[in-house]
Image 1 (cartoon, each protein chain N blue to C red):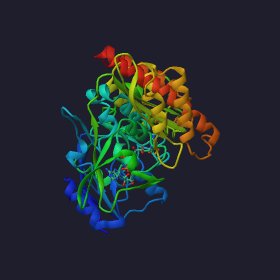
Image 2 (image 1 turned 60 degrees about the horizontal axis):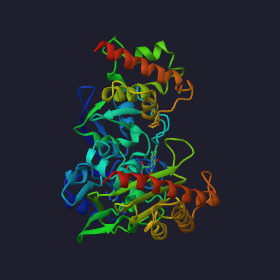
Image 3 (image 1 turned 180 degrees about the vertical axis):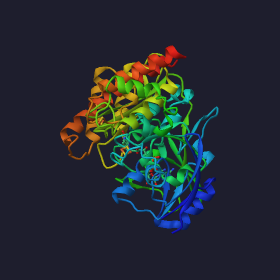
Length: 159
Length: 287
Ligand SMILES: Cc1cc2nc3c(=O)[nH]c(=O)nc-3n(C[C@H](O)[C@H](O)[C@H](O)COP(=O)(O)OP(=O)(O)OC[C@H]3O[C@@H](n4cnc5c(N)ncnc54)[C@H](O)[C@@H]3O)c2cc1C
Ligand code: FES
Ligand code: FES
């Protein structure tokens, strides 16, 4: 079967790729484009390690087909830092030790950024609900929530 | 496996009809992609309906709302007027999955996947929602409670798909609510779900009601007896007890790790009672 030719924009740069129908966006990012920041935890929508934004909506890239993103804009963890300058969320995750093994971290960061883009001043409860689809087996979540709250604080005072 | 992304309902119907049993609609993919991965479904022709404008829009007229079957939860959650008039339907839809799942999950997918525990379905049934179905023979309108026929199965024929859902405008002194019970607060499958929609008069006497139940039978149920127990009352304890008993009596649930038969039967009554109270308070506030 012939492959699909897909044109898309990833982190602001236009990208093209070939994929089979059954390949997910996560497969394409990792296997075809070498963008291995997005992680595969479950491939069933439960863990959030594969979180990306498609046209500004937070989604699990394991539950999107590569063919679906033709003409769409995608943001991944690779687009979060500005060169060597980490995003405030990334800095705060390091400061608060909000990661151990790090497998969940890209997904949490992408999801948290998507929250702060919409709501710069979330309550702790809002942060916890927004991130309920991201699982972490190491940190116990508390440090992650604190890091997000602290980053939100810093970003508000910076703007 | 091939993939098509038609831009009109007619083209989607043509693609589905040509594919026959090997074809399948793709909406948000949050059920279908999981099932394809596990091998439970292996469609040969995927017809993505998300590029059909009619199926992606929410429109409001003097008579009611038309909610495209492929509108995602996160999109409906931004429709202030629908939230104001149908809080129960919107809260049921928004309970589905996480933020990530909300970015993709649709009402059409929740219904047509055919899960007895689909959260939006009891709320849509209580609301009296009509599904608009398109197929090779044209369009037909079907009450939502007539779509699921068994777990994983629907009454849709070959080449048919759900285009949109119709909800009336909210009548004065009426309100709806949906409650579900799950073992944690997010990201789990309903043990029981209960939706109630009702109208009261200026004295607070219930004039009409509809009750929908999920996860307590092979398909979501419209429970006329529970609704009848509410009509004519001010939702006093006696009426609520009767409605709860009728809801419990309608159940024919499974035993599984989430809940025993006995537990589900009991909780169906409890949630019906609580959802009825919330709907009642909303109705009285909506003068
Ligand atoms: C992590 C996770 C959590 C979840 N939590 C919940 C939950 O709390 N409550 C709940 O109810 N569900 C839950 N689900 C299941 C799922 O997200 C919902 O059922 C969702 O509404 C499905 O919609 P979809 O658009 O993704 O459907 P899809 O996967 O695209 O489609 C599902 C089925 O319906 C068919 N279909 C879709 N649209 C149409 C149409 N317009 N006409 C005809 N057929 C159609 C498809 O062919 C397919 O068979 C969860 C899923 C995941 C992965
Ligand atoms: S890998 Fe996508 S949600 Fe777990
Ligand atoms: S840091 Fe290991 S899973 Fe979160």
